[in-house]
Image (cartoon, rainbow, N blue to C red):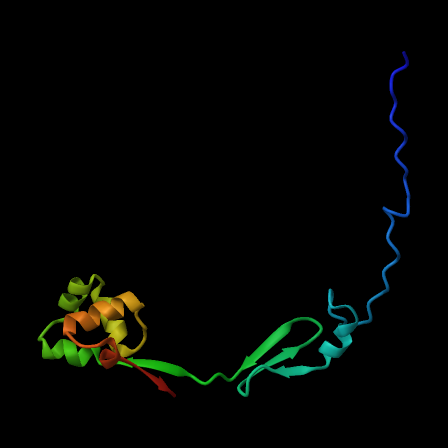
Amino acid sequence: MAPATSPPIPTTSAATSSPPRPKPSPGALPGLGGHSEYLNSQVLRLTAICIVDFTWQAVYYSCMKQRDAVTNSVERYRRQLSLTQEELGDIVGVTRQTIIAIEKGNYVPSLLLAMKLAQQFNIRIEELFYYEAV
């Protein structure tokens, strides 16, 4: 009996060869098909404040975002209880530096920490932290 041989693998076929790709125009964004020229020249306004500028090299974000702020009364309530920042931090399980950052407004605490602080002061969380559009 003769050994079984596999048929030769074709080097080119209609299934494996792909049609030649059209050459992209200069400055076209890759992967966007016929829309790249349109997007290259457009500036899309995502909101009244933020602008996204599509260029042929990269996407640049020019955001003049309105700043939102969460302010708090942690220092006022801490002083009412005659607690130091370190004592309050020990009670709620954070460092003195974290309490300092919260009081200065440099750090917005997690929901869990905000709840612990409000519970310590025996007030509602909304009385301790509040939202202000700046």
